[in-house]
Length: 239
Image (tube, rainbow, N blue to C red):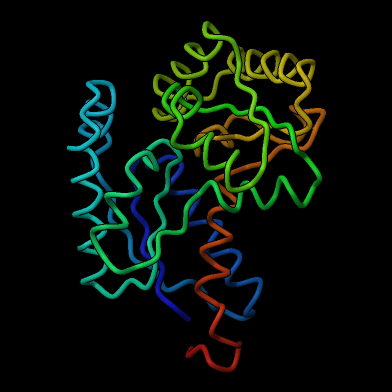
């Protein structure tokens, strides 16, 4: 089993889901009392969030690059950045070590292809919805047509993520608001909805969406499990 290196804390609410999903999947695949071999570097999200909203992305990237170096030194064999938005600084993280960074957009694009969805709606932070770093990877590498909500809806989706979900608050009114945005995206032609922020899975489930829902958190965590177990069989993993 190869050791997974998680860069988390952005927010810890969703990073906790990575830990749960990864360990549950390893136990299911290997049986017995097996769990994942992983390392985690959890950042103080207050500092990262401030840099995001002050447009100081190079400084934020430097923080995450240092986390990557520390995970490499501790023995990680891959890097998993437990957030969609901070993949904006993926090139800085990749340049910091020789470890592979498992990019969150890739299992997302693969899942869209698997279910036959070519036109997808994207929910996430304003950074993820509006800037090119995420949508272009989905469009150019995975051939998707990505739809996003109207500007006022993007602002409210963003606010709910930071003010509620990252703080551990789940509000029924916000769930209903997201449902209304999903309905509009479907009306615009979306064949599936991407939960492009790792906290949104805390608010929405499949019953909230009449088309397939692509949960980036779960897909990314399972991609890490695939990597960890790709060179190991049950008999090769020590108890």
